[in-house]
Amino acid sequence: MPSVSTEAAASTASADPAADTRLAPGTPAFRRASLALFAAGLATFALLYSTQALLPAISAEFGATASAASWTVSAATGALALLVLPLSALSERFGRRAMMTASLTAAVVLALLVPLAPNLESLIALRALQGAALAGLPASAMAYLAEEVRPRALIAAIGLFVAGNSIGGMSGRLVTSWVAQLWGWRAGLAAVGVTSLLCALAFRALLPKARHFTPGTLNPKALARTVRTHLADPLLMRLYVIGALFMTVFGAVYTVIGYRLVEAPFSLPQGVIGSIFLVYLVGTVSSAAAGRLVGRLGRRGALYLAVSTTAAGLLLSLADSLVPVLAGLVLITAGFFAGHAVASSSVSRTARTGRAQASALYQSAYYLGSSVGGTLGAVAFHAGGWAGTVVIGLVAVLGVVSVTLYGSLSARTAARRLQLAAPC
Image 1 (spheres, rainbow, N blue to C red):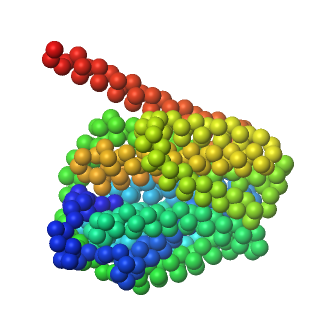
Image 2: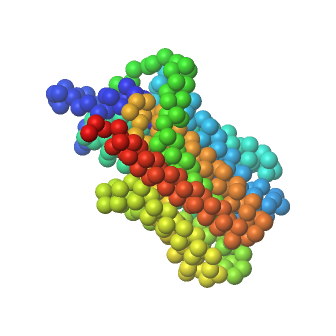
Image 3: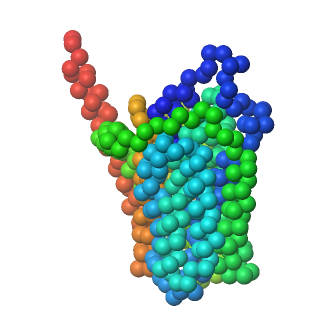
């Protein structure tokens, strides 16, 4: 994520475009940087959620419950949540390119070791290390683009990186599922590891050297002050909570859905279950439409629509027929991505200073929600079946409504106070 100085540089276009040495669209260097970060984003999310579609097979091999196996996902996302902020600070000192290279290299090495895990405990430990390693990529990629790419091309470059995230998350699950159906879950994880190795090699070969990075000094006290300022901001805190709660729903649903679909009355094979993640494409559409929703309904109106869509999907997914379950997943996915897009974009607009740290805190809350949601959803499924998981999702949805409603009431109260305080 960009630093404060990076944001200033990114928002100020050069007075003389001909003298601007940053990457310009249409140039070979710009294409190389865009493709490199697309490859990095693809590898990151393919690795981060690589075990999610394989949880029933992992449970079967190790004799583990859904809640125990879910830690292979929750440990990775939880470690990433804890380290996004510290690694964003380290990238200020050692450079974005160096941080991304080290992060991706470590994650790929661990990916090649993960299929060899002899038991569930070692698999969870390796996945936690992998999540910790991957934290260096989102902490540095946006900052690299903001420093090295001309402002008018920045949105396109970031869009390609985010597309890599989305496609990586979806394709990683598809690859692991279909390979696992033929040769077992270990082969599925190995396939993602090899694919990510190729992505890492492409990333290193394509990414241009940083020309506009200026090393800073590590200042833990200044970082702590900025973090405290953001955590003391009521609106930012509400946005962090909303992001975490939306991701709690999403993490619970997609961690457990494989267990539901492998059982009667569905009894779907592993490859078909993995193909369910094609529903992610719906999220691409709904997140892109979030800006238009905010324009028509306002931020809170868009959040209410997103949360209503998510709740409707949760209720619809209770059916014992595949078609309404798939329709429910479509609604859950559309609602989640729209809500996430509204909340995450609002963080950057709300933070007046230290936007990099504000965004890092949002990502920490977001991935912490994924970790908590995956674990709680699996525990609830073990205790009460799919209905238990849906209850966890509905509680999180109710939390989003409560936080948003509280924000609306607070805004009205503040406006009323200003009116009363205004001179007659």
